[in-house]
Amino acid sequence: MSRPAVVSRHEWLQARKALLAKEKGLTRASDALSAERRRLPMVKIDTPYVFGGPEGPVTLLDLFGVHPQLIVYHFMFEPDWNEGCPSCSCFADNFTGAVMHLPARDTAFAVISRAPIDKIEAFKARMGWEFRWVSSFGSDFNYDFHVTLDEARGSAEYNYTDANALKRARKLWMDELPGLSVFYREGGDVFHTYSAYQRGLDHLINTYNYVDLTPLGRHEGDLEWVQAWIRHHDRYAGV
Image 1 (cartoon, helix red, strand yellow):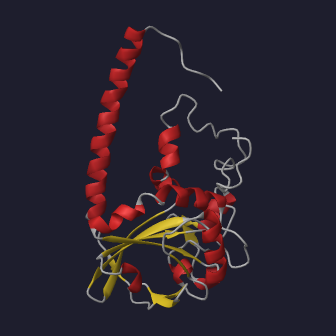
Image 2 (cartoon, rainbow, N blue to C red; image 1 turned 60 degrees about the vertical axis):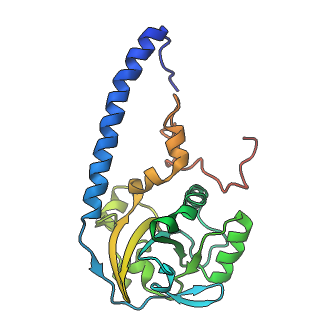
Image 3 (cartoon, helix red, strand yellow; image 1 turned 120 degrees about the horizontal axis):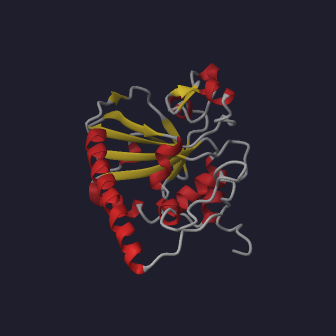
């Protein structure tokens, strides 16, 4: 891995100020993009989704609680797995501290996976997480939001692209995938407003935001896949 050049403090300051101008430009562009995202149209949800919770069945509407907005993280955890995906677990470690502030902005948060609720509860306890996590086992929810691929269930795209084309390009090698979806409700009506996948989730992984500040950065280029370094947080050894 290469390292930056060594220069005088004056030279560093000039380079830093030039980069600061670009950072400010990116912040302004991000603000504009967020405003555009809020203007996206929405789609009414007509399917009466029911999930398995630790205390019994819950509906998509139930997940809102008293709030008009709901963010759902689609966590990779197949029914026959005994633990959740390490990369999704890293994501969960990152949002654990953030989601406690969402109710102050009229927003609920939930995690949804296909694994049965007993497996979810066991893994959640192991990881020490407290966010709401329900099971979509036996539901079409994962297929309808294209985080579980199965052409027979009408799910054959990922990140708004044909999944088979992504597989042929070796940009996809699993049928269980991560994502995030946003919903809005008015009374008893629920609307889908936004979903993001793949690199669209990067800015929500605060670990990356930190390492992107360092001179070595993510240094993932030589790995078999970009997140091959990630482990469950109780499985890092000698770090």
